[in-house]
Length: 84
Image 1 (cartoon, rainbow, N blue to C red):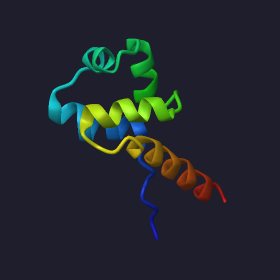
Image 2: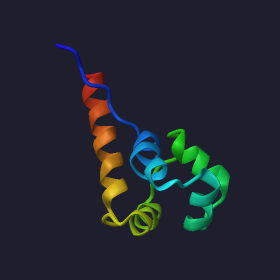
Image 3: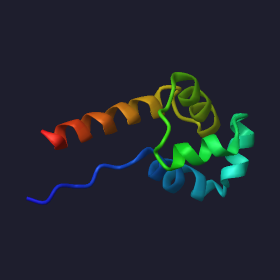
């Protein structure tokens, strides 16, 4: 049976939120009040989502404050399970 690839935070942010709303990396950085390089690191999955960042993203995109934190936890759990 073929495994479904584990989604990445950057993919979810880009495909499900930023593209449909026409939000660029620079615009997201401005809206979140964080540096653009931090947004790029998030989108490249090189930065861990903190509770504060999850809350900011949640407010901006109209989802719960823990949405991105829980998504990240799920991704980590899946990666760990895949490695077993």
